[in-house]
Length: 174
Length: 162
View (cartoon, rainbow over the protein chains, first blue to last red):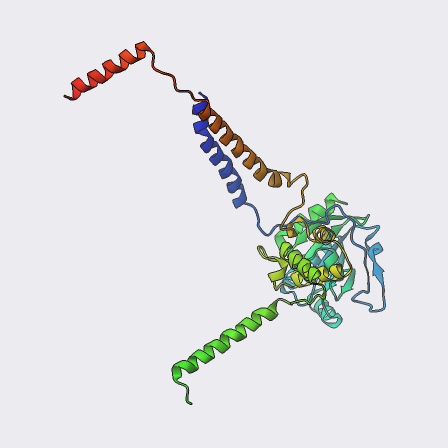
């Protein structure tokens, strides 16, 4: 009897393996968990794109939920994303931009051309804040709640179809 | 002395290859460390950190901007005198567990680390059981009854084949 069951063993191993491999087929290989989920937004002291003399820090993100979008004028998908960001800001989300590894005049020009969804833009020319946020490809979007905790991260550009998805996260953490 | 066409071609090809080689060398920045131990640690660390932008490349061989930033930070932290583990934790805290080619042991990864050991142990058990079963197999002489039955069977078989 036991010998009969042993004969079934390779089959069972096969079934187990097939299950995991089949599941693997539907996984997105470029999906990454964010290390920042549930963590405080990193501290920083930087100027804003609008005012070179201004100094802002992480307290900017306290007291109100904000959607922080990392963008750059050299990033083509950021242009594609602007209409969606404008739509989100029209729906009452406070938008904060991080102008990542960019030059001031180019960043400003970009906003003039493609729209201004952001209440303020943190100017991060060296990409230091981006590094603290674990940014590896622009655009990236972080949802930061009123206590300054990162609640959601979206890597890559927000497609028109994903606006509702992002809005649902905004309402969830409100 | 005039070169033949063939050898001219050879020279051109060799020069081309040499220029490609130097391009490949300059693509990934080589860093200079005074301390050979630190240089070795830098090589090991940059080889064991995965580039978050590219799917199957360590940061030591990747051209992506984020890999360059990470290499720079690794070098900086080495000069600051940080431990290897500190540097790896620093990267994982920002870019996620994904960047570690050797994942840290925690609630989700224990199976990954334990499974190979468990398989080796299981295999050893099977081998031991096999060897023991063989050793304990004893040869028992046939009983009288069995012997007569055997000879009658052989007899019948011979008759049939004749």
